[in-house]
Image 1 (cartoon, rainbow, N blue to C red):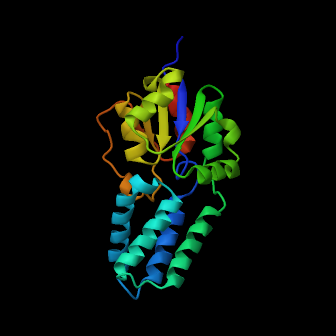
Image 2: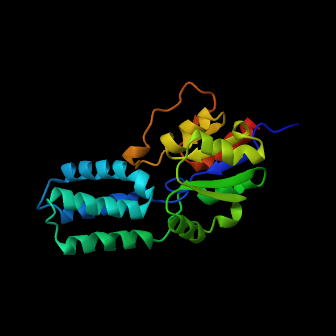
Image 3: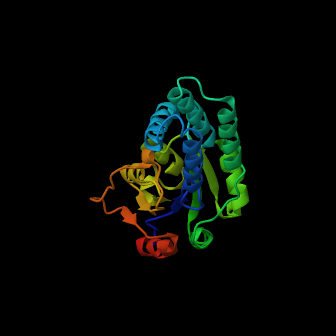
Length: 232
């Protein structure tokens, strides 16, 4: 009997391990450093605007985030931001780059379970060196048949990645981002499985493809093996 599903791919940040939480803590630190210049809500709105502008230049990840914070600090202080604040922001970014990995519940068990019967990939966005560091520290690396670190997650990207293993229509993408992990995968003809994290970057929000029978939402990774078994 031919399997419907041959390949399962996982997102990394906030699907297998914590990530957005550290961005939020750094944003709080950023707001405290600039509290004498602007209110926190306005500051974070300006930061989000800068991040949106800069994705095309810097891509996703901590380095682009730090550069966007510095740019925002220069803007809101009308170029009078103290050098000490810039130094603090750089230090905050270095702290983020060195933060230990914290696996999310059921991460190892879920990946290990499906790796016994399916081709398993890791597909993640972000800075190459940082993502390689996190994967090495996670202890999950040996469970994946392949790792893809991409600049964006789009329908063509998924179609290209899954082509060697039967095509996107026989693959599943599991992640916490509706915009990057679920919607383009369903558009490519595959299964998109949404695992809510609780903290989602505003630029990763999108409407769920609720009309598709290939869209699933699970409370956590613990029930993923049962879903995979039911799909067959």
